[in-house]
Length: 177
Image 1: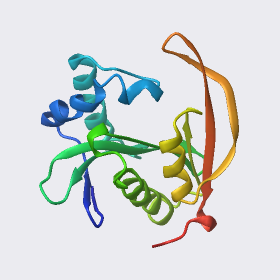
Image 2 (image 1 turned 180 degrees about the horizontal axis):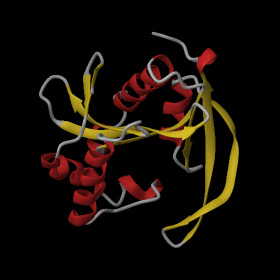
Image 3 (image 1 turned 60 degrees about the horizontal axis):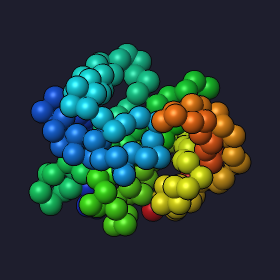
């Protein structure tokens, strides 16, 4: 499965992607808002192996893709939709810090939302971000997602209880570009 946008190609992971993924997955500053990381090499290899296994699911419940630059094929991040049942999915994205503030996360997330609503026939796509992660909140808002509220201390990670902003968009709210 491959998606092409104006500047990106979203494609399935392959095992030899682990080193490119590890560049950002091991970056402590990048993953400070994530539930996971920073990754060891074994963590990153295990993640890639798991994502390759999800490609064979039938029916498929996890759609995780490498984000690559169309101009040179370099892997710059990852994004995914995880089906949650009842025609809903969680959206996630992670991008190499060197490429932040260029609109790549929004471009990749938009392509996944489009696929989710038009091909998988989802009713609702939702996403979360830590309250201090204003860049991620901006991506969700650019997609047309609405802030539903705060999930107060709903998971424990990195030595403390974490809260999240919850955003969502419904199929009838999604605007095609």
